Image (cartoon, rainbow, N blue to C red):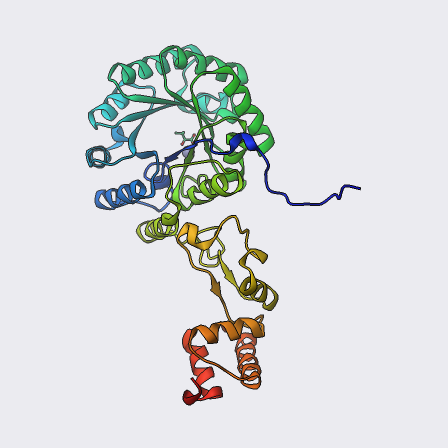
Length: 393
Ligand code: KIV
Ligand code: ZN
């Protein structure tokens, strides 16, 4: 009889080696994180790091919004990066013109398309929105730039209007369309169906932009790729409005390690990039954050550490290693620690304790752990020196 359980890796061979473009919006949506504000110098540093990381697109900002924003987008656009530099524009000529004047390679034109956002923000008719979108896309294309069109709040927009507006921008040679889940209300199954229907309906690259209000931004982005999207918008450390956007490291490693899809990201720079953004934005990475968090490859409990020491695949995914993402595996000593972990850490520090000494050291570590303390390298050295004595080293 076939067992009901088994290995649950996703088994979609159609995605093997499929290329997915990574559109980074840390400098635009990410900078909209409440409390985050970056100087032009900091934005340029971040743009260079994103380029080193290998993203395909850097959304550098919203040039029409202020002189400072215009200048920083223009400086990034002129700094000779490999990545395409993108500016944001409403369906308004002066916005698109500001992007063109800032020398961006790609203009991201957007308009609200859901009834609720239309009624309370732009207050235009469907006809006026379609007309505005077409004229703005035309202006961008006439100036020889790549054009991306976003139907903001697509997941709460009527399918008829979505179809109409995407077909309209396709008619004027828009290159890429984006399906934003602006308030994060999609779930992977519903988003998969929506993205699939749109992919079947148009002949442009399909991009997605998922917000994380229910913690589903990464899952929805991956479902969108399963459905045919070939570009994903992300932010480093999942920054962005409210609960943020899909997290770059999580989307990329999901694509690489679970789906065997390809991106241009040099994954060994993921941790370095995350830490730079943490430092410049002052938004802390939680210790439990997947991939880049301090604990992402840390092990404390006796059973886990023992397994890891024998074979790291016992208590790590295996398809993703710390080296792949520029991280380090750590055995943390505390009250859950077992003998194997202590022996291994001591061996690495140059100690060769006897069995009795090892037992004594373990007991002292657990005593400290019970008092709520973690045992760092210096503590361990002190304990080992007392128990073994310097001469035994
Ligand atoms: O969340 C959103 O819909 C946006 C658009 C500008 C794409 O940020
Ligand atoms: Zn957004």
